[in-house]
Amino acid sequence: MSTFISASQLFLQDLSFMDAVLVLLGVALVFGTVMLFQPLLRGVARAAMMVVKPKMSKEEQLNRRKMHDAMLLKSMLNSPDGSPSHAAELYALASRS
Image (tube, rainbow, N blue to C red; front, top):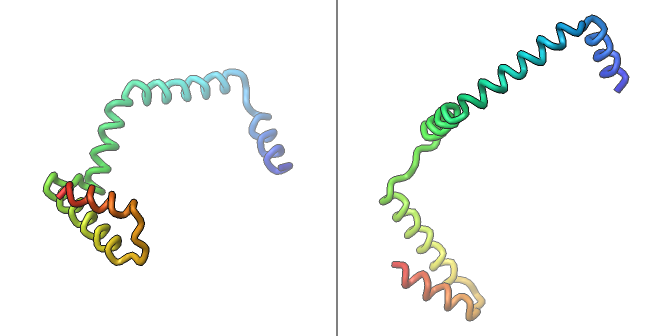
């Protein structure tokens, strides 16, 4: 903790009022620019995410859901306990297909 205090005192020792004002103006300018271009930056971020992880098509989503339902059905059928809630879930899965 004392190293942080001594480092901050060393930095603040040579800092004048005008330097502090310039730093604050620079921070405000950067913040304002980010706020102004926020929709553009958000779009660029979404485009980058789509490059990394592309969105699945409707057919792929349907096939993935069917595969998940089939695996869930298989695990329910192979489970040792036959609770009534499993019957309701099996009925819901069967009605989805």
